[in-house]
Structure formats: structure tokens, C-alpha cells
Amino acid sequence: MKTPVFEGAATALITPLNENGIDYNAFSKLIDWQIEEGIDALVVCGTTGESSTLTDDEHKKAIEFAVERANGRVPIIAGTGSNDTAYALELTDFSCKAGVDGVLVVTPYYNKATQNGLFAMFSKIADKATAPVILYNVPSRTGVNIAPQTVAKLSQHPNISSIKEASGNISAVAEIAELCKDNINIYSGNDDQTVPIMSLGGKGCISVLSNLLPRETSVMCRKMLNCDIKGALDLQLKYLPLIKALFSEVNPIPVKAAMAAMGFCENYLRMPLTQMEQTHKEILLKEMRKCGIEV
Image 1 (spheres, rainbow, N blue to C red):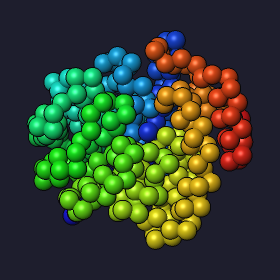
Image 2: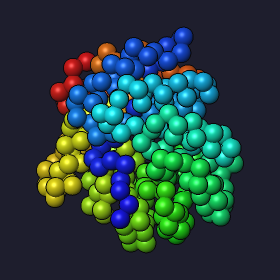
Image 3: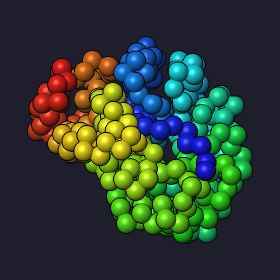
Image 4: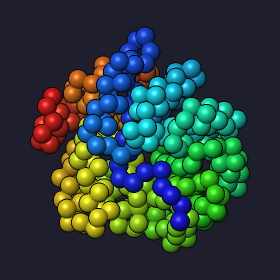
């Protein structure tokens, strides 16, 4: 059985930005708060971290900063995927040398790939990595899906430890679990499917919700890991309206607005992302208040 990078909830962390670049004071406070609240791991420079509009220098410095700030308190996972395999290899090599505990590698967007191409790309990155590789399947954003049979082939690689499954296809997740068995750890990549995916043997989630509610998201996962299905389900359903509001516009527009309302950062996004529409924002703030979040 492959050792998971973490069990429980990992936050797909926002990157606090302002007109001058990354706000490292806000970033340090956010990392510390997440850890103090009991989060199980942190993912930096993923989709929620606006990796696609970070410069190469910003991307690398953010990863280094997160590793140094966490200082071993929780695992740090770096987003190192790209539709340019050479760049993904460069980011992966850099991140491993910086001391990350895992790398999250998304499927290649826009140019996409065949299943053979996906197998070749992920295998090449896993050969280079010295930290465990987490595959990231999110076809709604990338336009390409990793078939369960391809995941099964990739799971034979000793350095491919996990998959973040955000396809929304529970049947495909079940097939991955059946085909791969103990050769891969499955994480939910959709907040509204954490409990269902963990019921199929998932080890936790990589979450947007936990930016706002790290402790509660971790508790939900812990309840599932401890076979308290009713307790976990109650939390999954309790936070469903908030999760819906967090995805009423493309991620990370709503979560950035939410974290700004909580005082963690400026509500600053880089184009083509724009400010959240006021009607959606009002619903988001309302749902946050219902969950006991002060805004």
C-alpha cells in the first residue's frame, strides 16, 4: 500500500495578491491560521492559487515561502502541472529541491493529449520527481479526462501516490478504486463530493471550502476516516449551500471574495478573472454568516 501524502483535508490555498504582486504578509498569516485551525495539508500554486497568471518567479517564490513558513508543521504540496511538459518538469524539480512533500500535476489543458500522451507525460514527471506525485483530473477546466484504465497503469509507477479526482463522475471514481486498489490514494477534488468519494475509500479532500473552514472540513474528513458516516454526512449537507455559493462563479473568484470579507487578503484578481457579481456575492456572504463566519 502506498503511503498517502496526507489524510484528511488539504486546503487548495488562495494566493493573496495586490497590485504589487504576492502579499507575503497576508500569505504568512493565512498559512499560520490554517495550521492553527487544524488543517491536514496545504496545496500552494494550484488552480485556486491562480497559478495560471503567476509569473515563473512568483510561482517558485510562493512555493519556497510556503515550505519555509510551514516549517514541517503540515505537508506542503506544490502545483507543478502545465500543458508544457518541459515546464512542468522544471517546476517539479524546483519544488522537490525546495522541500515540498508532494507535487500536484494537472492534466495538460488546451493542447490536451491522448491517453497514451497522458501516460507518457505523467510517467516522465514521476521519473523526475523526488516527492510523491498526485495526479489531478479536472476535465471541466482542462478539456481532457484521465480514463480509469490509464490511472491504473500510472498507479504502477512507484512515485505516483495519489489522484485528486474532480471529474464529478462518481462511477469513474469507483472504477479507479476497483482497478487500482492499494496502488493509489484517492482525494476528492470537489467539495460537494467529499463524503461520497471517501465512502469509496478516498483518503480525504483537496478543498476550496477549507480556505474558509479549515477545522470543520478536516473534522468532516476525520469522521469519515473514523467510520462516523452520519457525522460526516451531516457536515457535508450542512455546508452544501455554502459550497454552492463558492462555485456560483468560476473558482477562485468567490473564494477570493470570501477571504477578503474575512480580512485575510485584498479582493484582488488578475485578468481574465474579475470581481464577483454583487448578487452572487450577497448570497455568498449570507451563506457564510449562516455557517458562523464573521464578515
